[in-house]
Image 1 (cartoon, one colour):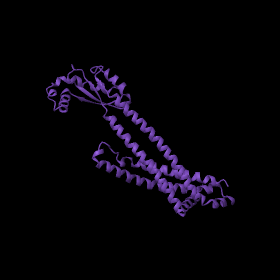
Image 2: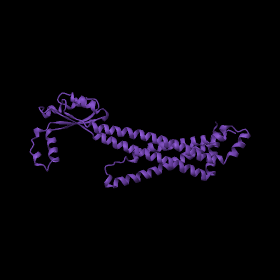
Image 3: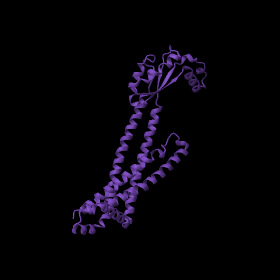
Image 4: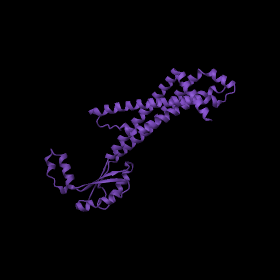
Length: 297
């Protein structure tokens, strides 16, 4: 394809898009709506996954040191604990700190206020890389000299619940996005097919005078490309505004302050790239699908 042909096809594609203003507007509107639906659901899934990761990070294990060990000996276990597979970080808590935290928690109960510090063992709060291996990590920690079997508290049921929620959310997200994407391509193909139907006589005449399928097809490809690009740009800015409005609403609502929203600035380049690629793919794919029937003259 020569440079002259590229400019000709691009000019024809742009002319056709603006010449059929109403149908082009309808195609862009439908594409924007489909992109917004897919984008909104994807961003909800991203925020849900971020919340699950935060909850996983807060799901710590507690490893209690043998009561006979001094604070210096207990602190020396940090190196051994860090070498346990799946352990990302350890935080030492002395018996004095543990006793103070316990008394603060039960400050209204005089029975617990008189407990001596020696009744509380030194301990480590353990952060894990993946809570899916909590049981194996617990067994490995109990094998560390100075910890011992039965001295590790692990919330295995809660961890299993987090994993189940994460897996189900991931599967549902992938399936729904795939379905919405296919539906979008189908709708756009049929919308562009309506614009192509108006030019069926023109296409038939071009075929009869010897125009190749490629010569007829390329202006439609460029038209679909431009429709997808415009749709992506419009959809991106609408998604941005919608997301920011929801984020401000969540931040200002004290009743849902447990929900954290990922800042859009962190995802902006990725969202823009996905919108542009999806929009152009839908536009070009829809054009190719629409023109195929009319080339069989």
